[in-house]
Image 1 (tube, helix red, strand yellow):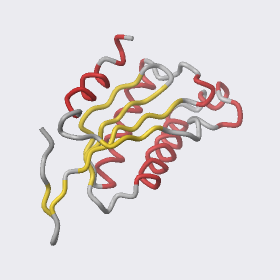
Image 2 (image 1 turned 60 degrees about the vertical axis):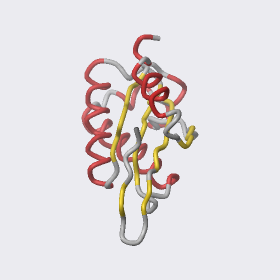
Image 3 (image 1 turned 120 degrees about the vertical axis):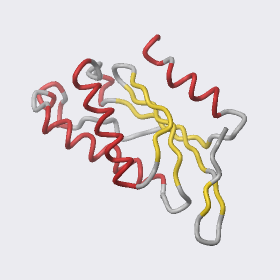
Image 4 (image 1 turned 45 degrees about the horizontal axis):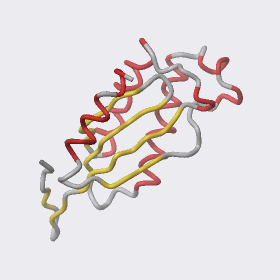
Length: 133
């Protein structure tokens, strides 16, 4: 069940399901790269003040379920997640630059949907099942 947060003069519960893909759908999110990406995304969440409720990858794309405040502007949040994670992954794994033309890790597009209490568990299960597919 979604957690109700209290801000200064407001009460909220905001969750988003976010998905984005590797450029050209290259299947690079495996092994050490996958592990490091997840670590980086948790670091970004902590730095930006939101919570990752569920996260999984499937070789060429990332699924997140996040809980954030009304102050988080989703396009900026996604830009930060993708930009910072790409920069840090390229630092740890410079060989990725040779696998991706133009040295871009992520496809510029993304999917985002709001999550209600009725769908939160379904989305968690869906995200967690990504490795099985």
